[in-house]
Length: 299
Image (cartoon, rainbow, N blue to C red; front, top):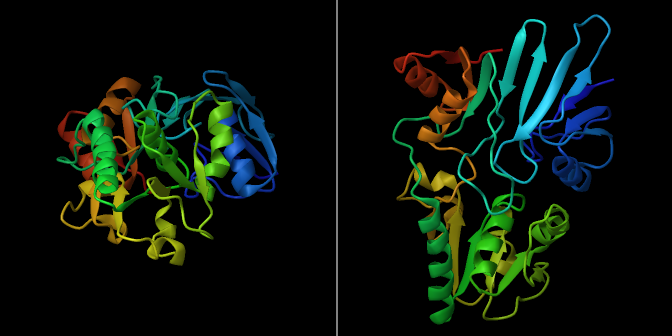
């Protein structure tokens, strides 16, 4: 039987699988909505699961909050030869829509390096959230329709909560609305939202939050005086060119920046570090310069 561990339910980390999937309760719930049913083995944070397979030494799997999106997990595997910690996507800055990260110790760290380039440092998160609210209010006051481009899972609910908590009326794309029941079940409160199904015009006087894939949908393009705002950490890579052909961008990210990744490595206490994804080579080099045994993962 195929087996997999889902660190979280983003499409680049979770695929439909006719087999056994180990995941947090929230990741399993989102995966069921997006991918359908399979054999989900659910474990809460810090609750070890014993893994046994013929021909292999037994090991123990434990999930810890990664702070990236709802249900995201750091994955620690412990066996006779030591322990491995896989970060998946990780973020040490507290989110409004998921549990804060908890980095456990391990002998070997395998970490993603999405923003692992020296110099990639995000501005303070409170200022970025305030900028989201300011842009929405400015656009509405001038008769524009503010359209925030944010991924349906993770960033979309986060932006919606920022706006709703500030009293800004919000219309959400149906892909985001569909996920809100999982967020609410996990204890995250959202105020009243309207559903923008892209088949009708949203009510005036509201901020829209839609996935980037809906940027060119006819119902969005037909909005009178739209003002598109991309909300993504990618805005940090090229500030002069907002992603998704937006009018402007806010680098509010659910990933760790360069200092955050350094801190993850420090908290893990790992004697060796393998880097992957993003700026893996550059981040491994930066870790070596700081006295750590690190190299890009090539397996």
